[in-house]
Image (cartoon, rainbow, N blue to C red; front, side, top):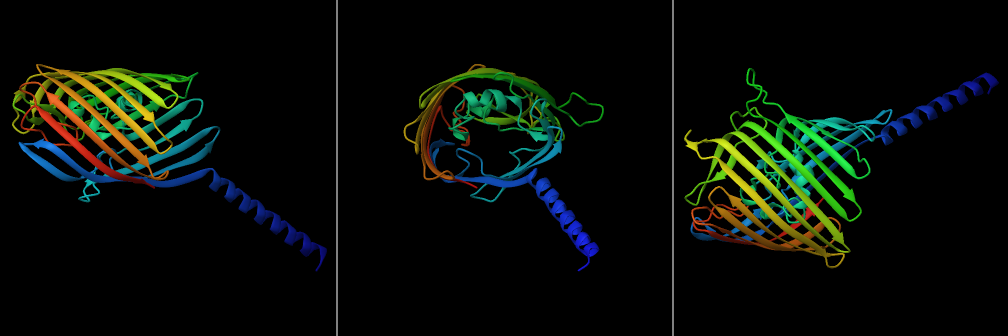
Length: 370
């Protein structure tokens, strides 16, 4: 073989190696991950419309869902991100619109900006200090999930910013558009939050404001569920909603104790089914909770919440035990009791209203993450 041919062959080999190296490098800087969770089990509810109920459950702790998330390195410290999740019922197969999907750009020094269907700042900065926003999950929500600590509702048409950590301090903001021509403020919302971590101590605060909630299907939020004075609930649009709260937690070895307070007010209330006007409503929630990691496989949790409403109040307490078979699979057992004052319905989150002022839920389930 001539020297010229040898040189051409070597050059081609070097070029091919460089191309493959470039492709490998680009692939290493981008990734897409598929993941999800299935949560299903059985529950006994003492009073549903005057009758006891045995039911197959889905999402008694976490809503079942599947998801895709990805990241692409854009250079200069910037990255493109996306998240696409879809909730569903394991028992019925029904698809649920209760998970986020968004796309955005992030930077370790500048923070992250995302656009889409997203959790508000109550979820990000206040909910982690409640049991419903963490280990306890769905059934431990405050009555009617009035402060959205259990993320019953996500904000559509939203633009959201999350800061990096500044010595343990993080903050964020969100704006959700009404998407209605000529009605910029009709069913729009905005939210702010911040948190601070210093060793075993964590603290957070959040605020959410919405105008014309539930007035249109194209807007930021769906209608809200509110209680009646006759042991029932109804879907309502509200002209103004304000929700705000603070929380704190402290870890001592394997035990973490936390407390949270939140306030939600709803004014200009309209009953969706009839178009009738209903009284304004307000709720103040006071919660204390604790989580104890008994062994590497066993976690125990419990909480008590007192909710003071407009002319009514609710006591809500519960306990939960969780056993981890592996990193992906666990089983749980929990019991929740709620007592409402006269004229108000007892409604444990995920259950239908009772015919009286008391309701008990005892449930067990199996979860698998992939």
